[in-house]
Length: 193
Image 1 (cartoon, rainbow, N blue to C red):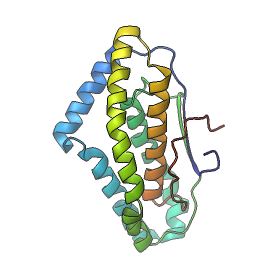
Image 2 (cartoon, rainbow, N blue to C red; image 1 turned 180 degrees about the vertical axis):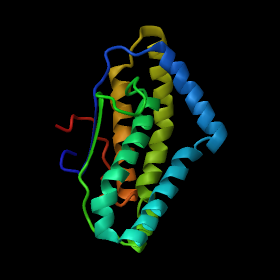
Image 3 (cartoon, one colour; image 1 turned 60 degrees about the vertical axis):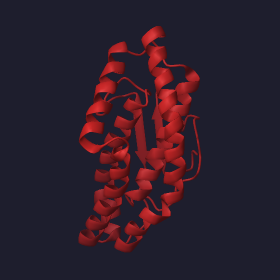
Image 4 (cartoon, rainbow, N blue to C red; image 1 turned 90 degrees about the vertical axis):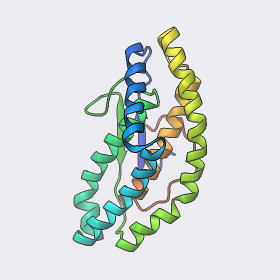
């Protein structure tokens, strides 16, 4: 999906740290205790469009895309970076890492009602993604075992997780109203560049 306004590239590490497997487990347990099992993504999917609607109401759609689009892109990169870390795509936590590149080309002139309607419009994509996330959990377990035993994530597992995180990134960008285009039902694992 090279033409989509949100692209995510992650460099596949040749080896991965066994210690990070345990750090991920602790991080997921902590987040599950604080937010509830599975509730973290659901909460993000609700908060992102509501926050976008609030900013659009204050600033107007054009100004939101221009001024807040970059700020929203930074927050999206942090969220997607955490998702990539948890999905065993990288051993680097979100921040200024070179192995993770999220690019967002902002577009559109959203309204408050449009931002809130994205909650409804995103349901089909979110449901498919939720079902795929169940499989992603199983794939993540296999990846964790492989990293603990062999020190690396199998290529097939890594590519599956990349497809999931790319889909999440596109959906979150749409929900944040920083792009106009509805996210495709696509499990893209090819390099964006």
